[in-house]
Length: 183
Image 1 (cartoon, one colour):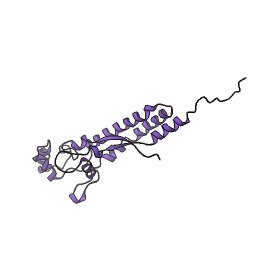
Image 2 (cartoon, one colour; image 1 turned 180 degrees about the vertical axis):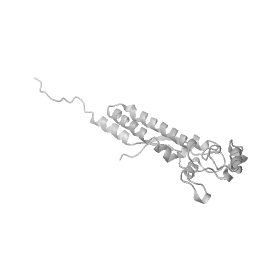
Image 3 (tube, one colour; image 1 turned 120 degrees about the vertical axis):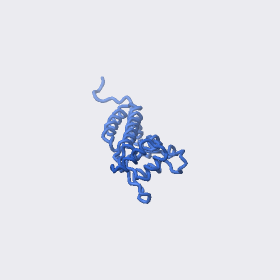
Image 4 (cartoon, helix red, strand yellow; image 1 turned 45 degrees about the vertical axis):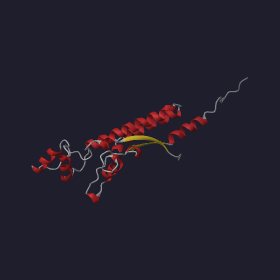
């Protein structure tokens, strides 16, 4: 005769612990990874350096902060939390691909949000000297922006976007999923 109660047929605890550890040691990082920071314009400055200077400014060079990375990522925080909640539940239920898929989804959303922030601002307009340099290089909108300023219109960012010149910086914004030490 069988006794009523719970019968353990398989110990699933090790698998559960492994899934929790795998999830807890993954990080989505958005920005310009060192291995993807090079530029071919001969300036000697990497995209990572240019991004840092744009994000935080450089008073010595009269470059105001034009934050795009931190606000861009922050703009998807609520969505990322929702995705992570679902990832957590799915992972605990045994869906091994859930963590990777969810982290990739968050990375793609964050990357797009940062690039969108670079396009939309708002940012401090470029200095006259910077717009003049762009006009000399034939950048679209720069000559028109200069003409508008000479006609007494206030400096704007529609024709000469502060963070978009060649597009090189924006093209190098990406995400990576890294494994970190367990907490």
